[in-house]
Length: 463
Image 1: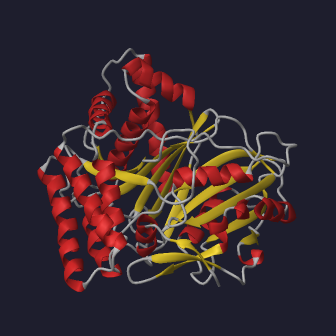
Image 2: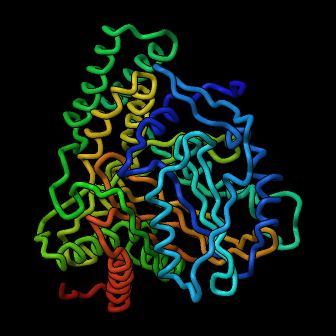
Image 3: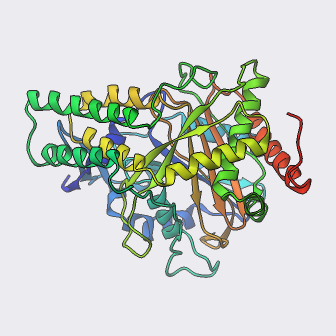
């Protein structure tokens, strides 16, 4: 096996975050309206997916770094698999299969990705894609999806190129947090360019904690999240569900009428649904705010070459689950999101992840414990293609993605825009949300309540 390339510190961090209760795997689900044959899928993988050299490589950890090492015994049969569901298989059975796969770590002796083809699903097929987070972030994996798909069903040549974007975070000039970013950069440079001795490791570890403390002191709310049903010990068994998509134009119209963004509307709807779900389970949520970690794209502006790897930070988003009135909740979320847009928080977290990834593995556990205590869930929002994609000629009717949860966090909510729809999906540890379809249903209801208020001209609505 020959060394392919060095692993970046951030990619190494995501590899070290792997836990039995939380595999660090990004999972995508494609539902195709026509059958996709295994031979056709294998051909697409060989011709397009494997043009990314990293997918032929195994991540190998070292004391202070890591490498991508080519797997000389690579066998496509280990990665492209066919799964049969018992007839007559429907959405419920597919959700159960997705949950089982999400609960299962990838084989560390091989490149960390698999594609599971489910044939004869609703007159077509389904495809579950699993890729370890250390290989790439969500934006890069949208580019990978683009390598597998076409806009034209008859096109077997050039793949579709994704235009997925996520707003970058601006760093406020003169901000005290910007000094933290510079401090981390100095530490990272030292960690990368020379081998750290034990005394230096201890000093750098203290600096990581100091930066986190500085974040709190400078106004970023990093108190531990309140204990709810979403903050319980994890079983490691995942449950997955998704519902009918929301019409993107309807979400956009609601936001436009109320002076908010699409993201504001979705986050506020999610907060309301979580509050109602917890109330229904006996939790008292009046006045309660919990927090979600949200990935923030830190890649260069569109037009720059897109590479695999992780180039995103994390923002901590307040979810006012205790506010019952949809408009009051929406405007609270709007204020939070406006403040985050001018905050360097995501850059600072990215810096801390980079620093951790250049230190011994023992540093990772306390860091993950620290950060995961600050939030109750992961919420990701990715804009995908606005046109119908095809795989080997089969139209992709639905697209869903789930990002992994870290440390003690056991719930993830994905919002993915494909064509003219917003597809929402839930992944959760069964100890936290045994039936995530219940939450999915409440999300739809909360959005309908907001639409109803807009149609009434913003009148009051009893909670």
